[in-house]
Amino acid sequence: MSTLAEAPPPLAPPAEEKKPPRKRGRFTPYWLLLPGILWLIIFFALPMIYQASTSVQQGSLEQGYKVTWHFATYWDALSQYWPQFLRSVFYAAAATVLCLLLGYPLAYLIAFRAGRWRNLIMILVIAPFFTSFLIRTLAWKTILADNGPVVHALNSLHVLDLTNWLGWTAGDRVLATPLAVVCGLTYNFLPFMILPLYTSLERIDGRLHEAAGDLYARPWTTFRKVTFPLSMPGVVSGTLLTFIPAAGDYVNSELLGSTDTRMIGNVIQTQFLRILDYPTAAALSFILMAAILAMVTIYIRRSGTEDLV
Amino acid sequence: MPFVNWLKRHLVVIAGILTLAYLLLPNVIVTVFSFNKPKGRFNYEWQQFSLDAWKRPCGVADMCGSLSISLQIAVWATIGATILGTMIAFALVRYRFRARGAVNSLIFLPMAMPEVVMAASLLTLFLNMGAQLGFYTILIAHIMFCLSFVVTAVKARVMSMDPRLEEAARDLYAGPVQTFLRVTLPIAAPGIAAGALLSFALSFDDFIITNFNAGSTVTFPMFVWGSAQRGTPVQINVIGTAMFLVAVLFVLSSMLINNRRNNQKA
Image 1: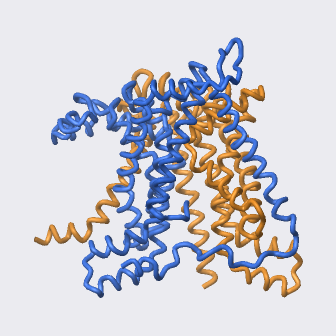
Image 2: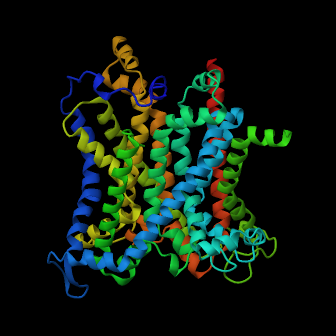
Image 3: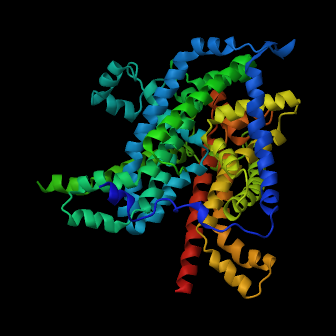
């Protein structure tokens, strides 16, 4: 099996090292890189350093802040806001799993079954991007409204009883509950799952499916043993592209949730822009970054995929 | 059981179409509610059909102003990120040099970072520098996060390009500038266009980073955000619907042009 997965369509171009080094223009690459890399260093890397220094400062807005290597801020922030951290990870994970479950059939459909409809479906996946995501997220308020058809349907199917029992919804409403936030997160990041999945599915040689069929594999076995393993690069980059932004998002929980669904993004935003407690806010966003980098590293190691995005 | 068999055979298609419906449902709602005549400040419940908002799309104070600020920022951010990103992509694909690994991770990190972290760290930088928050800080931030996406898009295209085409051009006595303009650039163009389009969409739609670094400047996403608290005018739905239609028409027409070109070649 593993030989089959490794054999025909080269998933990643074998190695970049094949090309001979260019002799002419020894400095050309540096001139090409300079402006863009400087931009990233000044406005991406340097701010991270500033933030690190802010997180160990003490003082007040009126008297100014000083670096005092006050690492206790991290501990205080973590002990005060661990529920929001946990919630963010949990919501983002739920949304990622839902995106994978929903996105895979659609990506599969576009890659193998759509025929001449392929381009149209592709447009319909991408075009919503151009309507501001805030407007589309607000539309979920209408869809999930208390007296709306969705709540009625869920209620009459007794789904709400189940979700109430699980603590995902509260009473007769979906809005302002965890379910609404996860629904919004799933919706917002679904295209980020579908596109990488589609890219990696499309690269699969259709003859492999025929070969599996010739070897008496049933469709489900073919999928489990051939299609899915070959689409792993897409699964990995899709889950990362969904999980990371979802864990830091605060728009969905603000628009569709309540105070009980606040995620860590909401806390960072409030600390920075309303309470103006910069050290705590900086420490929180550093913890978030570290947590995500750690989770992503472990995940990439375990999935054994090196080429990303 | 013919029905069960039919269901089994088309399960993927049915599931895919349901997902597509989930993706498009909010757009349908946005379009339908652009013809609403709401009672009160919020446009979440259907009241009665009306063309008012379509007749006066700019009838709301400040909305079209914020739209024009967003458009300006998106255009400049696209130009900046596309130029800088294309240069980096060419350097990465075409040359061996030291620090390649470091450059690659510096490109990758902004895409792997939660937006709120980048937004907050940029704000600490601007506060420390004492910069005036507004149009230019937004523009700087947008170029920063669009850059990586342009590099990725252009890199993919240039990597799959056959180097023999350029060798052939040189064999035919084309100079370096001529080779670049007549051969390299046209082949890389779809990648560059994809990067530019992505930049435009990302910049135009960005809320989180903008919210942190905008000062008192109000972009369109920030106007929508504010309206979620104050009351949403129907005109927001009109703009949303129009953007969706423009995007579909744009992509459809570019596809038609492509098809025609391919047919001419054949």
